[in-house]
Amino acid sequence: MNLVFFDLESQNLFQDVGGRENISKLRVACGITWSTQTNDFSVYWEKDVPALINELRSATKVIGFNLKGIRLPGASTLRPRSPFRFHPDR
Image 1: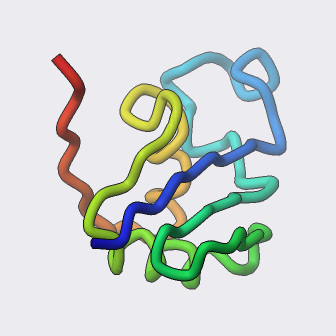
Image 2 (image 1 turned 180 degrees about the horizontal axis):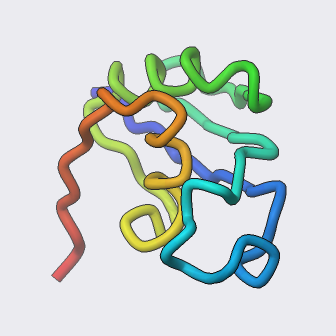
C-alpha cells in the first residue's frame, strides 16, 4: 500500500483572481508529497505538475488538507484529464 500525503500551495489568493469561481487562475506555486512507499518527501514546482499528477495516480490513497474544495481543482486545470475520486471521511 502506498499512501501519499499531499499539500499544494498556490501563487495567488482568491482575492487576487476575482473569487472562488476563478480557481483555475490561482496557479501552482509548489506541491509537496510524502510517500509511505519511499518514506521520503518530493517537491514539485509549477513546471513539474505532470510528475506530481503521476505520483498521485500511483498512490493507493492520497491524503491531504482541503483537497476537494480548493487545492486539487487548481492543479487539475493544468492537466484536465486528471480525474480523482474523493472519499471524504465520515
